[in-house]
Amino acid sequence: MQYFDSDYMEGAHPLIMERLIRTNMEKTPGYGTDAYCESARRRIREACGCPEAEVHFLVGGTQTNATTITAILRPYEGVIAAVTGHINVHEAGAIEAGGHKVLALPSHEGKLDAAEVDRYVSDFYADPSWDHMVAPGMVYISHPTEYGTLYRLDELKALSSVCRKRHIPLFLDGARLSYGLAAHGTDVTLEAIASLCDIFYIGGTKVGALFGEAVVIPRPGFVKQFNTIIKQRGVLLAKGRLLGLQFDTLFTDGLYLKIARHGIEMADRIAACLEKKGYRFYAVPQSNQLFVVLENSRLSALSGHVSFGIWEKADADHTVVRIATSWATREEDVEELLSLL
Image 1 (tube, rainbow, N blue to C red):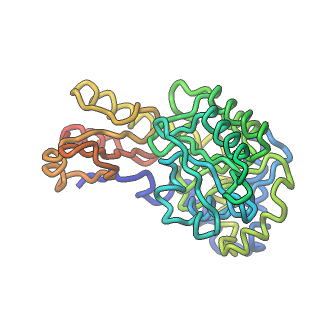
Image 2 (image 1 turned 60 degrees about the vertical axis):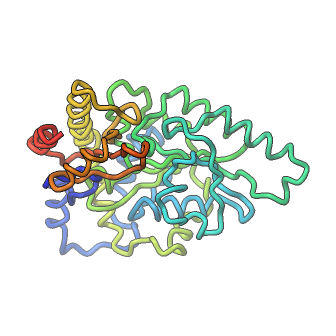
Image 3 (image 1 turned 45 degrees about the vertical axis):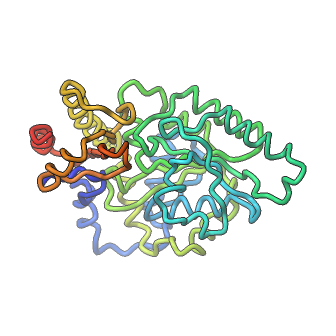
């Protein structure tokens, strides 16, 4: 059986596991105050070109999204996101459970359009009864998006410009950020993200870590007492060094991007072969997630041999499936998948 459901099915990169074992019996201070976390912060700041940035470590993506959004928004504010955005579809209402509404706007292959965001905010405040409604308090995007697509630098700049004009923060979900940075032809860098976003996170769970995400706040103090809010939300890990050590390893000798490039290479190989064989893609392949339209009969025939992420119905006879590669995808598994398809 071949599994291409997601990019977090394996454990952790061997270098991380080796280091976790080697340091297992060390005694360190808790809650991210240890030397490993500080070293990881220093490496991340350097990679982002932000020597003063705050860096906080959390365990997973949903906790990071929910905690960050709650920390930024006032009680009467909501968060703008694409209708296909992760926080609007696949987080079980975590944002709403925290008391904030997701304000969904049209999705353009997973992306938000800056002009539409600007128009939404303008129209909101043009309504005489705006103070009786949920105000747009921040903008959420992900890179790559839920459809594996990538923002271009000009698109990111346009969104950042709108947010700064409207005085609302721009928050980038980087759960799969490394695959976006490693993709062919992208002009978006980590330094650009740090200069254009008010807050973002670097995903580890899907890119080589056993678990963990690193929240970066380029301007210190932008969120007051963020560490306290993390604690209040129940997501401040007592054994914080487990997170710091993993990110310290990922950001040593370019490992984070190096292993992501492997995931991109595997996805590119699959995409090229499927395109040659006449398969139809639901979204343009750009990163490590491929969205392929399969006939239901073919999907049924494959079900005992390969497992995909079932995404949505294309029509009565076709289903959109997600093929996800990762840092750990083996070449022989790709060849077997292609043979089956």
